[in-house]
Structures are given as C-alpha cells and as structure tokens.
Amino acid sequence: LASDAESGHVAGVPINHPWANRLSRWGYSAAGKDVVLDPASPLLHHDWNGTVIHGVPWSRLCWLPTAVTDEHIAARLDWTSDALLAVFPYPHTMTMDAVLAPQGLTITTTLRAHAGPVPVSFGFHPYVGLPDLPREQWQLTLPAMQRLQLDERLIPTGQRTPFPAMDAPLGSQAFDDGFALGTDQARFSIAGGGRRVSVEFLRGFDHAQIYAPPDEHLIALEPMTAPTNALVTGDGLRVVPANSCYEAAFRIAVEVWSR
Image (cartoon, rainbow, N blue to C red):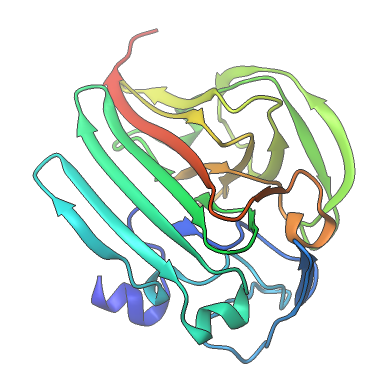
C-alpha cells in the first residue's frame, strides 16, 4: 500500500471523489460557486491529455476508522481542510461502511452536507477479473442502458444512444465508456471457469463507466452517482441540501456459475 500510495497506483476499490472520471476543464460551477482548479496542485491528477481526472487521489484522503471487525470496517472523511476546500469548496463529511457477508462485499457511502449545499458526483473504481481464464472467454453481462457519446478526450458530448442488454463473451472488445442507467439498481457481471463476479448497484448510483483495456486481464465495472463532467455541465448532477445526506451502495459478489 505504501508504494502504491507514493506512486499513485490504484489499490483496493478506490473512491473517486469529489468527481468520478474526467472534467472538461480546470474548473467548474456548481451549487452557486465558481471554482478554478490549480493544475500544479498535488491533490489533483490528470490523464495523457492533461485532463483532470478522478478527483483527489485515494492516497491523499485521510479516512479515520470508526469501527473495525473481521466482517466490517467503517470510516469517516472530514472535507473541511483548506487544501481540500480549494479543490471542492463544499464542507461535508463522508462515511463509508464495508460489510463482508455470504452474499458479498457491500460498500455504503453517505455524504452529509454541512451548512451549505454539496454537489454529488462521486464514484468507485472496482477492478475485477477471472483468474486462469483468458479475458476473451469472459462472459460479460450488462443491462440495457444509454451509452454516452464521447469526444476525443472521452468527455460526454450530450448525445446518447441506446445500448441493448448484453450477455456474450468479451472477446476482443475494449471499453472505456460511460452509461446512463435510468435507475439506481442494476447488475453487471463477468463469468467463466465455474464462477461469476458481479457488481450490483443497490441504490444511489444511476450512471456507470465500463473500462476494459484490450491488453489487460481486468475489467472495471464502475458505479457513479453522476455522469462524467457533471460538475461542469450540470447534466444529471444532484445537490444535497444543507444538513442533509445522500447515500449510495453497491455490492461485489463471487458465486458458483455454470453455463
């Protein structure tokens, strides 16, 4: 973990907060505030295009454990420091509960606004895979959705096209796509070699990102509370009123599978 934190590599199931995926510019306007981001800030990360991405890296967020057992971890993140407020000037508290049970690992995240409203655009980046089975043979199951059309920087253009439900081998397909679900309950999975790994959106996540690079043995089935670039466009962006909460939950499960 120490080396991953120092290098900025992804580890575990990281939260992308205060925004998931990319912003089209180094700034945004939301909930009555205009924000200018500093490209030199150590709290920000950018992709190959120089586009700011994934909010504040997980290694820069100080979560304080509040409960720890073999089956349950709870933690709190206070978004009140000057450094964090320079990136996202909305004081709030996040709590996260991770519960391991026979039906899977359930992660519940609650955002509580303080004295003012807070935009909600966080997401998660769970990578999953099937050991000892080529990715081409993974059976990928996705619900019917709306695919968000993207520009050359992978920013949504505002156009959408129907994406029919899928239940087929991944094959040589590659994904780096955003989707609107039209609901906050959905199930995504890969299966093969006698097992199925699923990511189930339980509540609060009505958008998704699918990331499956063709040369890597993984796929990310990502729950998102808003579409990419929502802080800039306002598209699909929720705002939590002062002294109120927003809760979102998803589950990762592994089960026996046969076809």
